[in-house]
Image 1 (cartoon, rainbow, N blue to C red):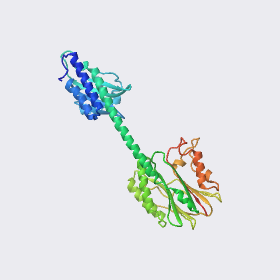
Image 2: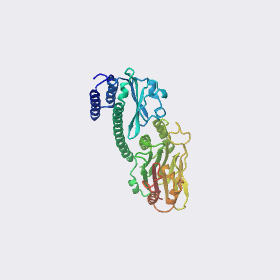
Image 3: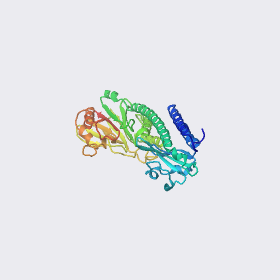
Image 4: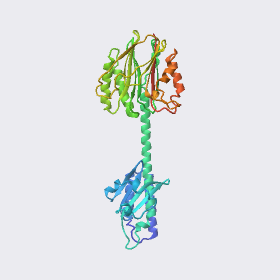
Length: 408
């Protein structure tokens, strides 16, 4: 069919419009890709309606130029939000907006919200009469609306599929990460060291990690760590850290050397974008000596049930990955003379706010372990009163705890 620019029979014009709409509808139902739908749309406007230039700006998260057929490239970068905010109806002159090459601007609505703008330019004139394009504006607006809503639906379907894939990946990642958290039930068989833990990732995957390893018949090692940031990147870094930690931690490695090696690995892996706070300890059941290094982690709480003394194992060096080389790493030792408890935690617990808006700090831990009951009972009661994991609206971060009874 030729261009509908001259006098034409109403029947022929109506027939063309119906056929064009039918063709577009069938194309949409056939799930043609966006590029082909836009090509059909451009063909109808330029080849059949005598329109020389057409451009579409569409909004998704931001405004983007979806189609540019014939307009100068610099128009693609205009600030649509500010330039076109007042256009609510078809505008047949855009010179006042600084768009001299644009003859007509057509807003496209979806659910009463502007979804797109169509620019039309270089239209054929009909002598001294009205341009035939003006006669077909309602048809062009309808056609544009159908096309743009279809393109938006295609985008939403793709986004939903992407989100489903991402959700499945996150679920798998969460399951894999849970495998990093050790089953501490075997530690209950050790009469000298009873270890318990609690782990709650604020999102599907988290950046916390704790572990407990039997190093020899007389030595047990345990740690807790927290990577800066959240999400998949933090989880992947912590997964790599766990593998290296378990490979390096032995019954005889010097803890200062262990921390230095782990720092090198984290520095290389994270490329300076993230760091890990880390507390590691090794307990000798026979000598009852507990040695530890705190690399910028929250100070674990140590409680002697006989004397009632509370000790905080404060940091002795910077976190892993903060510096290429840690200048000073200090190992500390403490002799466990009486039945004692140690609680290690991440800042998701200590920075949790109470009902008055104050951070809990370590007072909540001290309040619950300041007795002769097993630390397992203390943890269960503390977690219950705090409404963890799902009944505390103030929870904002991963919460991890590893605690132990050190029995004489």
